[in-house]
Image 1 (tube, one colour):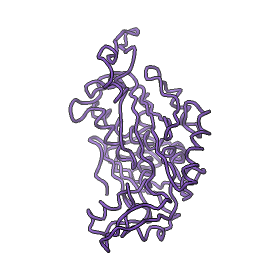
Image 2 (cartoon, rainbow, N blue to C red):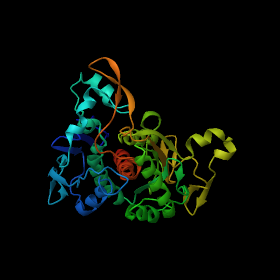
Image 3 (cartoon, rainbow, N blue to C red):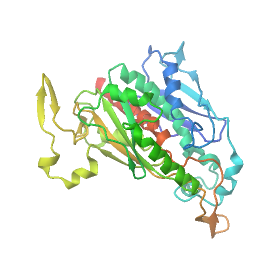
Image 4 (cartoon, rainbow, N blue to C red):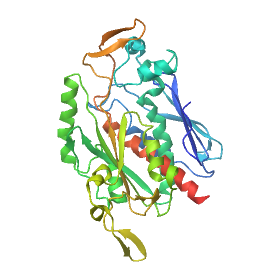
Length: 361
């Protein structure tokens, strides 16, 4: 079982990519909250594989089964446990990877950590398949946040070198976030998708893959939520976001760009909007000193290209102790970014809801 995430709620994810099922346990949820299972299904469908030409052809419905923690879909105070059956596995595609690890994948360090007993099929417990139960947990937390008028949404910021528009970090709204969630392609500028799709399919046709960036926003969080130092909002969101495989970087607000600015350029001037304190710009991305400022929380997460590619690669044979060429078989995403958008939203919702609970206790 993965180490539990959270201080007030505890999220643990279990299973492997090709095991009978995968699942999640959520401990610490308030009793008496009625889950909207239709909304959870809709949310998880956004992550599900096998839906278009730019994702893996492995078709999984990602139908969840709640086995504890609710009565008539109302939380009862017991740990909430949900499982998702794996129904479309082809384990033979991964047999050679036990000895010859994939470059840029967890195969080699997992082999060392678990003395060669790691489940190599589909990446085992290191697989992006485990983001399905993550999305279930995030969908539950998102419903609890929306009860408090806090909304989270994300879009594809870029695929390789093809860029979407950015959020207006001052005025990103619930309406904009909800529109993205209903869109088949989560983009602010829908006209850019054909070029993104072409970039992905061109890489796929050459046996290669591409990465990209996702931009996420959280609106409605009042100022003063969070803690300084080790438990700041950046810390907690970052920890949750790195639970999504392939994430290699994160920045809040103007992030690394702010290192090139003068303080007079980077500082966000305060002003009163009625009785509410706001900032004229939002270079800080809604977080100051680890605490929410009341402005939208905005960050970007960078995703590496999918390691499992059809091109021949240099690797090693761990049993024979020699260098070896690797040709990967199986079904893999040529780009994970489209399916990762709800995963980023889910991880953010889990972190923010846990912080909100801490603030109320």
